Each structure stands twice: as structure tokens, then as C-alpha cells.
Image 1 (tube, helix red, strand yellow):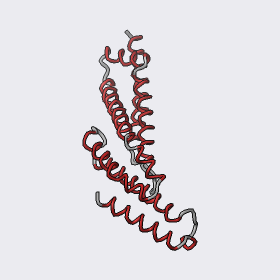
Image 2: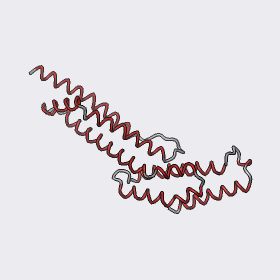
Image 3: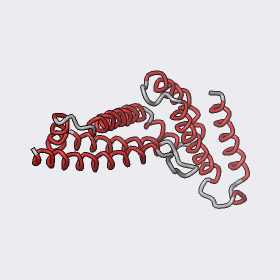
Image 4: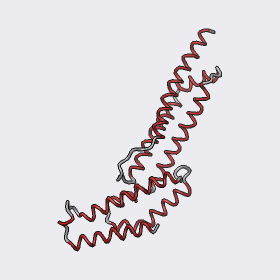
Length: 202
């Protein structure tokens, strides 16, 4: 009996260690992201891909034979630590599902992200209706990405990318505005303003 008690105690110590590691990962994933002020929307997809990989890896470890054996022992022993474990297991599963769902929907916007980065304001303006329709679809059918917090984060990054593209377009490879031919400068500024007007209309 004493040996059984010692074995259960060791299993509880091991589970406590795992729980602390998982709690740390969950806490870090819930922190506010530190990003550059001008970061573009591709960063949103990269973030969720990384998060998906992290939580999928955790799920694989939870499903490992070693982990299931420890959980089985503690369930049979009616250990109190099982409640904590079940709560964390559910949170990991939810976080993995959220990341997978968000990656799936953000991939539908990826073609627009590359357009925002490479093209001139006129080409971007032509794609705004399609981009907005795609975002509306995500907002209406995504289980996780339909919150105002998620949408605001995405729109800030899209706006950042448009600003960066317009700045590059206006400068046209020159370091100083005064080095740009006057008519080119005026034309590029007007095109950028037109993009802003069309974007704001949505």
C-alpha cells in the first residue's frame, strides 16, 4: 500500500510539473502581443501559424502513452489534480482549435496581403471590394475571428501596409521628396489620396 501511495505521489508531482509548464504557455499566449507600429497583415497569419504549431505540439504530448498512463493512474486513484488537468486539457484543445480556425480563414486573405505589399495604390484600390467581402465572410462565419478585438487588429495591419506601400510609391526610390519630378510626385500623392478615400468608404 505504501508503495502504491509513493507511486501515486510521484505521478502527482509529475502532473503538477506538466500543469505548471502548460499554464506558463497559456499565460504567454494570452499576453498582449508586442509588435512594431507599422507591421503589416502578413504578421497576423504568421502569429496564428506559430500559435497553431505550439498548441498542436502540446496536444501531441498530451496524447502520448506516457502522459495517458500518468493520467490513468491518477484517475483511478481519484486524485484531486485530475480536475486541474482536465481544465488545462480543455483550454489547450480550445486554443489549438482557435489557431487552426484562424489560420484557415487568414489563408483566404493571403493573396490580398501580397497585393497590398507589392502594388501601387491604384491596383490596391481595385482589390478593396474583394478584400472587404472576404473579411465580411470571415467575420460572419468564423467561430473565433469574429470579435471586434480580432477585426481591429487585422484592420490596423491592413492600414499599416497600405500606408507603407503608398510611402514607397510616393518616394519612388528617392530618399528626398525634392528629388522626385514634380508631376510624378503630384500624381503619386493624388493616387494615394484616392486609395485612402476608397478605403475609408468601407
